[in-house]
Amino acid sequence: MRVQGHRRFVLAAVVIAGMSASCERAAPPPPPNAAPAAFAYEEATIDSLQEAMQAGRLTSRQLADAYLARIEAIDRSGPRLASVIEVNPDALAIADALDKERRDKGPRGPLHGIPVLIKDNIDTADRMMTTAGSRALEGPPPDRDAFIVERLRAAGALILGKTNLSEWANFRSTKSASGWSARGGLVKNPYALDRNACGSSSGTGAAIAANLAVVGVGTETDGSITCPSSTNGLVGIKPTVGLASRSGIVPISHSQDTPGPMTRTVRDAALLLAAMTGVDPRDAATSGGAGKVPKDFVTGLSTDALKGVRLGILRGPFAGYSPASDRVIETAIEKLKALGAEVVDHVELPNAGKYDASELDVLQYEFKADLNAYLATRRGLPVKTLADVIAFNEAHRSDEMPYFGQELFEASQKKGPLTDAAYKTALAKDQRLSRAEGIDAALSKNKLAALVALTGGPAWTTDLVNGDHYLGSSTTPAAVAGYPSITVPAGQVFGLPVGISFFGAAWSEASLIKYAYAFEQATHHRKAPTLAQTGTLR
Image (tube, rainbow, N blue to C red; front, side):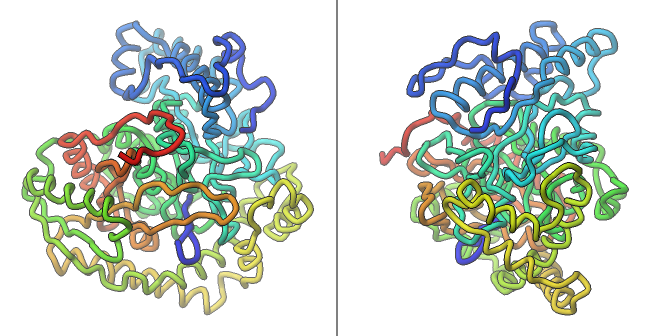
C-alpha cells in the first residue's frame, strides 16, 4: 500500500531455529561478498519442471533441496536479500510425499510438487507463523489455512516458505520505507541491492526474481502486487476483488484486498491464478465470480491475441515519472501496434485522482474493523485488537519503530464503526467514480478492450531515514474499483526493470492475461537479476 503524497498503500533476516534439515546437508554458504554459484533451475518454468518430473529426471525433493540451498546462499548469506522470512520446516517431508503420490497415482495437475513462496500475511496451519512482519503476531500458528493455501495444497503445490514484506502490508506509517519489517529486516532489490524492492509484497517480488522458488503469491490493496512485480522484473496479477478469497489473510480492506500471483512468466501466473480461485463460504465476495470465471486461464493463450484488439493508452498522471521510463511506454506502444492492436492514444480516465483522499478514509475505517475481526480468530497472541497492536508497538518501540511510527494505525483507531454515514458515503463515492464513471466509462466511450499504462517508474534507492521517495504509478484506479490488472516486464532503465499494466472491467482477467502473454512473447523483456550492488549508469 502507498500513502500520502506518494500513495504508499503498496500492499503491499530472521531465520527460525532448525529452519530445514536440507540446509544442514547443503554446501556451506559462501562468504558475504562472494558471487553466488550458478543455479541449475534459474528462470525455470512450471511446464519445464513438470516435464522433467514426469520424465523421471527430477523430483520435488531435489527441487526443494535446491531452492532451500539457494535461499541459504543468497538470501541468508552473500547479498542477503532478506526476502524469505521463514522456510517451511516440513518442506522436505512434504516433497517426499508428493513424489510418492506422483509415482503411485500420477500428478494432481501442473502445480504438483512445485515449490511456492507465499507472503507472510497469509495464514498457514502448519509449523510456520503468520505475522505480517510484526513481532506482535509472533506466536502459535493459525488454526486453519487461508482458503487460497487450502487450494494450493489441494493442487499439489509445495509451500516452501513465507516471504518478508513491508510490515502490516505498509499500512502503519506515512513515512515508511517499503520492504522493511521488524521481524524480517529490509528486503533488497536483486537488480541493485541499494534499491527498493517496492512494497508491500517486496519479499515475494525479490525472491521470485532471484529464483528462490518457482512462483510466488503476494497480496494487494493498492499497488502491492503490481509495484514489486514491476520493479523486480516479474509478471504480477491483481485479480478482481473476489476472484481469489481473502479469508485467512491479515487484512487492510475488504473492499480492495486481494491475493494474486507473482511469477517470471505470464503462463506461470495464469496457472497459479487458476489454482487459487474458488468460491469460499468465508468470503462472500467470491460468490460474485460464479459463472464469470473460466475453468483455467491458459486456454487460448496465443501470440496473436493482440490482433484487432482496441487498447487505450493512459498518459498523465500515469506517466512522466522520468524521461527514461517514458521511453519504455513509447517503445511498448509501438510494439503493441506492430502486434496488430488498434491503439487509441491519450485516453482520458475520468475522475482519476478524485478519490485519493476518500480512498484512505475508507481504508482506515475498514482496517480497524477487519483487523479486529481477524485477530479474534488467532489464539495465543499478545494482541487481540488494533488498540492492542498500537500499545504493543509503543512498548517495543526500539524493535518495532526504529525508523518510522504508526500514524496510520492511530488514525484508523479513531474511526467509528462501518455503520458510520461518513464511511458509507466515501465508499459509495469511490466505487462510483472509479467504476461506472471511471474505468467503465473510459472503456465504453472509446470502445476499448483494455487500458494500458506504465505500471510505475524504476526502483528508487532505499532510505530508512526519510522513507520512500516514490514517483507515482497507475495502480490506484483498478485498486479502488476492485478491477483486475496485470503488469508485465516492458524494459529496463539503467538496468532496473519497468513494467506496463493492462487493466479493464471486472472479471476480465482471461482477456488481460492473453494480451500480456502476446506482448511478453514478442518482447521477452524479462532478464534475470545480477545482484549488483547498485544500478548501472550506462
